[in-house]
Length: 142
Image (tube, rainbow, N blue to C red; front, side, top):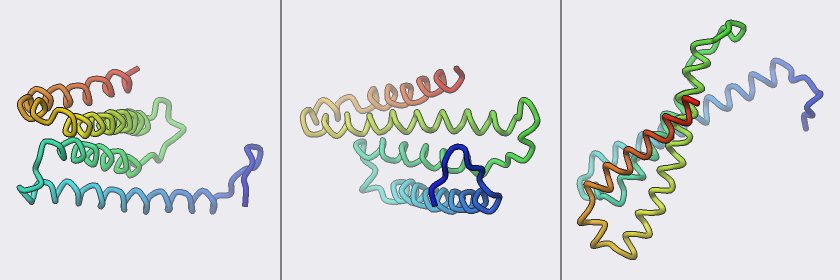
């Protein structure tokens, strides 16, 4: 069934979409959490190159957990839960995008200039974390 913008959705259609979103978000949270747990559990895979993947999984899990913030009183203006949900969702989306870029950068650097990357790990780590926190914070507040 194809819905057109002028068609109204029935309550049962909205409920189906709601429950599918809940279930798929839960599966995503489980997968992301598993990646973080495995990274923390096994020392052999705790490498600088995999750190951005763990940060990406963390922010993806946060992004999918946002759907579980209750939003019952949508008529209330401003709706505090909706504002919190929007901020966290925007922040985690932008942070995930930045971590994806960081993964690309570290992957290229590990192939091209591994020695430089290893010798400056602490600097890169601080810069990556600052970039992934400041840019999403500013964009989410705007």
